[in-house]
Amino acid sequence: MTAEWARCRWVWNECVAVSRKIHAANRDAAEKTTCGPARLDKMLTEARTTMSWLREGASVPRQQTIRDFAKSRAKALKDIKAKLPLQQRAGMPRIKRKRDALPTLNYTTRGFRLRDGRPHLAGGIVLTVVWSRDLPAAPTSVRVYQDSLGHWYASFVVATELRPLSATGRVLGVDWGVGETATTTSDAHDLPHAEHGEKAARRLAHYQRMTARRRPARGQAASNGYRQARRQTAKVHKKVARQRQDTARKWAKSVVRDHDAIAVEDFRPKFLAKTTMARKAADAAIGVTKTALIEMGRKHARDIHLSERTYTCTACAVVSPRDKNSARVMLVRAGLSPAGVDRVRAGGPLVPSQREPGIPVL
Image (cartoon, rainbow, N blue to C red; front, side, top):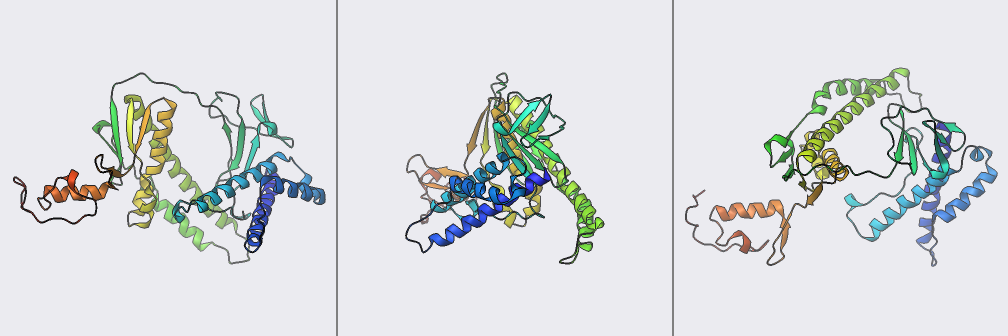
């Protein structure tokens, strides 16, 4: 698998180099040239005729590498053409360095078979796997990859099966936060902050200091102590990630089992990484929890409604952020605005007026 990944990584890096070369040439050329899968496949065929080591193994994962590269590049160009903000754009494909990139191999239906519970990959590779569960249908593709601890996994793509649950007649609203990961309209289904990362912070800091002390100088090989410290650090990170995922799945299962329809705040916590609450927000694992809830709802045929953090007036179609609208509500309730909330123009000037009766003076 390591040798196969080395060949696929070389193909990916060559695709990146060719793409950059074509992009630079197109800046001044009158006629634009493309860098599609057909051209890259032709270049791969030419390279295989001149390099004997590249002819070893199977061609399926290398051809799939070209397809993955083309999809990644096409998405990046589409985002640039749509003039999306930099934070929302998909980055252009980059060089995969040996010491940084973890092995990932993709095989389509013509590149693998399942025989006697063992995946047989193209190139004569037979894997011995420990199945987490039986496959519900015949897989259409498989991704074999290695994690930061050196463990290998096989992820199969299969058609999903819906498992509808009995109707309960109840609905639920979910709001995400940092103090509590999820605050719901039912007190019994609130999800408190588990603080898995906070509990592991001391051990993680210990291994990170150990890694820093044993870091090799530039140009020198890493020692066994340095590799062991890095492995221990990765092990702590892996355990925390699994704990967060396990907590999210158990909570999502209970929510989906007890409610027919769920309204979820479509919250994107990326901006919290730039605030003083970055560590606590990351430990809350809002993104992991939201993904688990959506996937669990689809699996059991529940209605999941994503609600944006905006307010839209049905009369004048004015759109404003929810927090901004809430601030205007506070202003009206304090008697500092003469109009009701429904007549306050977003961003408009306030007209002095007497306070509304029954509203205390701040």
